[in-house]
View 1 (spheres, rainbow, N blue to C red):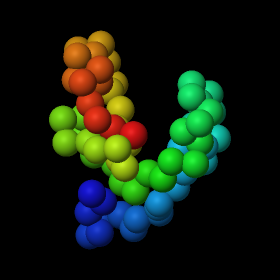
View 2 (cartoon, helix red, strand yellow):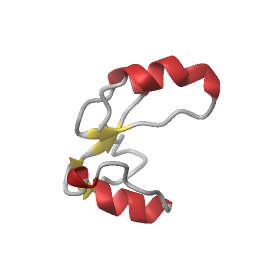
View 3 (cartoon, rainbow, N blue to C red):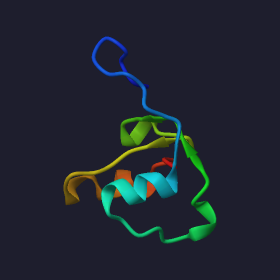
View 4 (cartoon, helix red, strand yellow):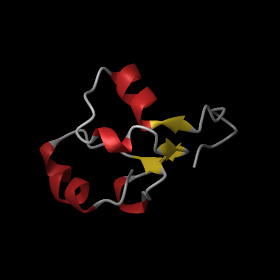
Length: 68
């Protein structure tokens, strides 16, 4: 969840909007309307949050995450 002391929540946003903002291609177009509400660590992510890994060391966590 966004810490309101430092950031204001900008969402929810759709997966399609996130792809557009990041210059990414959506692998499954049927997920384009899915709403993302926040950012979370890989191990705490849910279907309504987005998470990312910055290097190969986190590959196992990335594959196991429930992030949307």
